[in-house]
Length: 279
Length: 106
Image 1 (cartoon, rainbow over the protein chains, first blue to last red):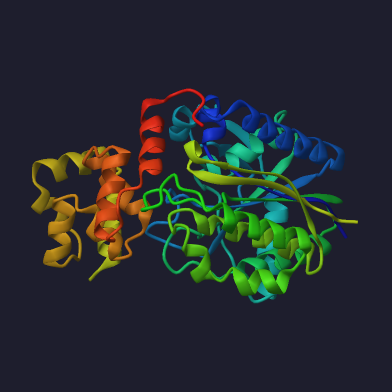
Image 2: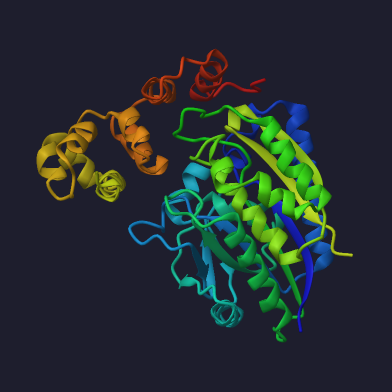
C-alpha cells in the first residue's frame, strides 16, 4: 500500500517563464515564494512518483477528444520540442512510470471511469511549468493525466472529483512505490480568446479558494456548477476543474491551505497555489 | 451548423501548408470540411465574433486570429461586438501592454 505524501494545486500559466518581468515586483515575489514553499514540501515528501493532472491545450485532444487521458510512457518530453522556444523553457526528458500508469488504468476501469492513454502525449505549459518549478533537479518520476477542460462536452466537476477518488484508490492499492504525490494544476478565472481576455473575476476566484480552504465540498459543488464555471470565461476558467481532482484525491472533509492568490492581468489569469492538509 | 467541421478547419490552420492553401484558395481548402455556407463565409472573412457566438471552441477560433494576424485588441473587439458588449478601457490597456511587452505592468 502506497501513501499519499503530498497534494497540491498550482497555476501553470506560461507567463511564469515567458514574461515574469511584466508582473509587479511585489506580486511576483509572493508567487515565487509560494513555488518555493511547495518545492520544499515536495522535496521533504520525497515521492517516488508525482501524478500531475492538468488540461490539454488543444495539442492532443483534437480530433479525438477524450475526457481524461493518462500519459503511460516511460519518459515524457516536457515541453515538446516545438513548445520550448515559445515557453522559454528547455525541453527535458522526464521519467514516467509505465507500470504504475497501467495500474491506474486498471483501477479506473474497475471504478467505472475508464481512461484513455497514450505514450506520446505532447506537453506544453500545462505540466511542464509545474514540473520545472517543483522538481528543478528532475529527480522524480511523473505520471501525467491530461483532462478536457477547454473543448466542448467537458466532464462535470463531479467527474473530475471522481477522477481524484480513482487516483486515491490506485495509490492505496499500489505496493511498488511507497510514496506518491499529486499535483493538480490549472488557472483560476481567465478567458483567452474570449470577450473577457485579461479580465479577472477576483470575487469568483476568492470564493472558490475560500471554499477549498474551508473543506466545504457540498457548497463547492453547489456554487461551482459547470455553468457557473464558464461565466468568467469559457476559454480558460474551466481549468479550475483540475483542482476538483486534487480534492477528490485527498477526500471529502480535507481542507486546503491557500499559500497565494494573485490576480495577474498581464498574464490574463488569476493564479493560485495551495496544498491540502493531509494530517 | 457543424461546430466540429468548423473546429477541424480552424485547427488544421496550425499547419503551414494548410494556411498557405487557405490564403491562396480558401474555397479549395474549406471544401474538405462539412460546413454550411454561412460557416464557410465566416471562416473566409475571419469573423471570429460570429464563430464565438456559435460556441466554437475558443482554441479553434484562436487559430483564425493567428491566420488573419489580428492583434489581441482587434480580436477581442470583434468578439465583444458580436456579443453586444461595449469596449472595456481597462482591458484594452492590458492588451496593449502585453502586445508592447512593457516591463512591470500594474
